[in-house]
Image (cartoon, rainbow, N blue to C red; front, side, top):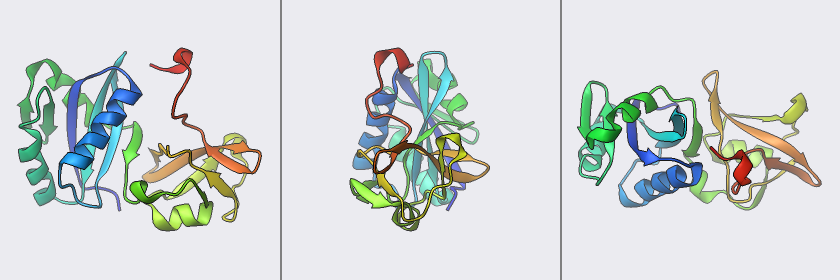
Length: 182
């Protein structure tokens, strides 16, 4: 389920919350295929780009045409560069990936609590890991807090978990303390 086409985007986002919001806005505004991925990528100190993964070239070409008209957004796909000049380098840098995945197949239907087996069966998340290397049973409960941010590791979409009182929580916090934000 890994995308074959990636589009880099940038609009000068400085925080995870801003970048996450932009990806959610794009998902709501654009008719993106169900197999779309969207991630935030640190492109420079204090700056985040976005990377959108699509299942095929026709989907990427259609998205590129729609994204080119987005106000203040720089777009990079293959050798094409469109949009606002001030952020073009960041859009290109976002193509390298390695960030927090915000949009992925199944993200919008995740309930507040589910088992690890249900998570793996109903989303594009391939694998979970717990802090300290603790094995995670398929029957273990995950309290999502409406905020899952897996990352790509060795080609697998992997969600990092933290042990909690009745199961697990996602390691990535929905509202990190100011000392911990970029």
